[in-house]
Image (cartoon, rainbow, N blue to C red; front, side):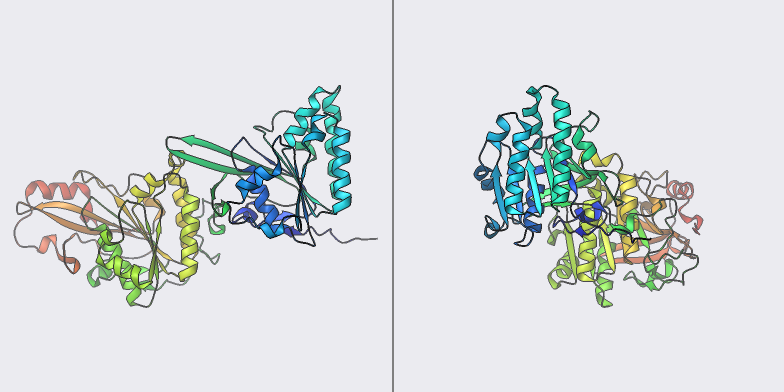
Length: 505
């Protein structure tokens, strides 16, 4: 006799990003532990899940084991957007177990829980704080055995009543022997750390029976809306050893040649070999004032002229108008949007989610990140150590959505070396444009070159350019200019190898 595979229904938690981390939602009738140090958001997470899932058909019982009445807890939880006063005493009921727990008799505590569950028939049960139950039992002889028996009985009873259960407790590590860690189907660990002026909160799913979860630590933020978890975008969950895999699963070599996009400057399009291939990532590197942001604005404006929309990620303390008239007008028109991430405690995954959210909302095809230097400074200090790895994950996630990405990178122009980025990110990009200052006829002038366009021929010319009221104007090649490049500057240019005609396959 053969039987079919048991089907586990997964419930949407109502917490943005958490379902993806859990591997598709919360298993119904599971027995879960929400653990972490004080103040990390355990109770807020439990309430957010409860208010999202509780209905008259699936009511919730919330057992409090605190020395303070539930009314005090609710006074603070009412500040969150997810709080629904209409669900109290209808879909949601609070029960105070403080007196039962104070007796130290676990059998009495279990009997009270059983009585309430049998009377109410809840589909969701919460016990907050479960650690208080454990502490109250320590005075009993053989407390560990009693606690193990209590936890096992509670888990079996809740499953038999078809209730999804959450135990909330202040735990700092899962190393110490604890029966709740063994019995629980799911372990959701929250943690927080403070470094300088930033508070960083992270979540880890250390256990979830019956389904694959996303491994590792995932940052989350608590706002007026509640918790939001910043899981890596699905497009970023790829083998980092195979960055050439396209969003449709085909490799770059097997895919058809991509359509070329205009940069908004005919001369630059020619230098790139006919424009920038759609879906590529472009790094524009140069010293301060060399015109990187102007080139980025031109790139977005050309997209709008072609009927496309765009998104710009801004990481510097500048207003929209200070970014130039072009960007200001595009923002007013609604053809581009700005992701303004100037907080001191953001993560790369959070920025990636914000960008992808705007890309989907506008159906955008062009994205600008201006600049990588500001991006790094916007991150919480704890995220800067692995900035390169996190940035690579974000770039590939954006590329997998099909957008074309332009990033700017601030460089110190030393005249004696060719460097594209202080972060070693040149390998991430499909194309590189470098801007430099040179000494010509006793004047400091600007020059640019296309250093790399992956799988494409491109110009090896070093061209002068200037900036005027109409934007960036690319002029003649250095060899065609009138007057002589000073011997000192010419020697520098040769040592830099700018005119060497690099073609990256």
